[in-house]
Length: 341
Image 1 (cartoon, one colour):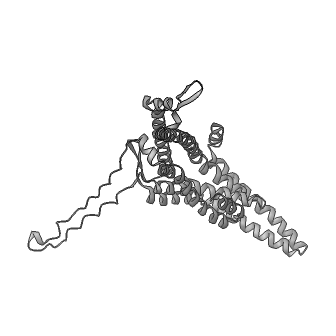
Image 2 (tube, rainbow, N blue to C red):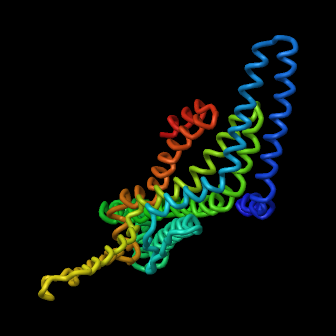
Image 3 (spheres, rainbow, N blue to C red):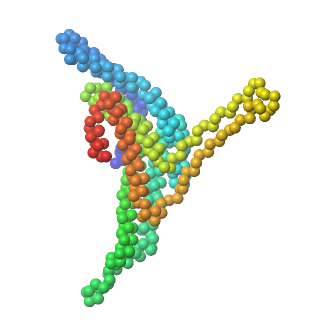
C-alpha cells in the first residue's frame, strides 16, 4: 500500500513544471469568469452578485501572488529552518550532518528516518534476546511444569511468584516491543511519504484548488499541510530529539590591526584572541539492553512514540492558523485535534 502511495511522486515528478502553470491558468480563468459575473451583476443592478464577484476576483489575485512567490517562500522557509536544525543528529553509531542549503529538509528527513530505524533495530535486537536466550526459554519451560500424583497437583510453575513475575515481564516486554516495531516502521514509511509529496504535490495542488470558490477550503488545507509538514514538522522533530547537537556558531572575525600601532609591539592591537567552539559529545551509541527496557519501558515508550506526536500537534497549530490566513475553515481540523488530544 505504501508503495502505491509513494508512487504518486513518480507520476507527478514534474509538478513544478506542470501544476504551477496549471494553477496560474486556473487563476486567470477564475478572474475571467468572475469578470463576466461582475458585468452581469452591474447590468441587472444585483449588488450582492457584484460584491461576491469582486471578492472572488481578489481571492484569485491573492492565489496568483501565492503561486508566483512560491519559489521565494520555499527558499525563505528553507533558510529559516536551516538556522534551527543545522547540526548533527546521532543515529546508531554514526552521525548525520544537517547542512544549511537547498537540501537541508531532505537531510532532516533522512536524519528522522535514520533515528526511527535505529531505534527499531535496537528494539528488534532486544526482542531477539528474549527469543534466543536459553536462560529465558528455560524459565518459560519451568513456568509450564505441572506435577501431579494420582491426579492431585503437587507442583505448578505458576505457584512461584518470582518466576511468574519474571516471565510475565518478559512477555509484556515482547508484546510491547512488537507494537512499537510496527508503529516505528509505519512512521518511517509515513516520513518518506511526506518528504516525497508535500512539496511537489500538496502545495501546487492546493494552489490549484484554492483558485475556485467551492474548493477554497480544501485548497487552503493542502497548502497549509504542505508547508507545515514539509518545513515545520521536521524542525520540531529534530529540535525535540535528544540526539540532536546544534552546529557551533561561526568563530568571531579576527580584530583588525590598527594602521598606526603604539610604540611598543605589546601595546598594539595586533594580538587577538581566537575562540574555538567545538561541538559537544553525541552521547552514548550503545543499544538498548534487555534490562534497560524492563526497567524503563515507560520512558522508551514516551521517547519513541509520543515524541513524533508532540511534533505533529505543534505542527497542526501552525496549520490551523495558516488555513485561516488562506481562507480555509479550521473548525473540523480543530475538532479532530481536540478529540485526539
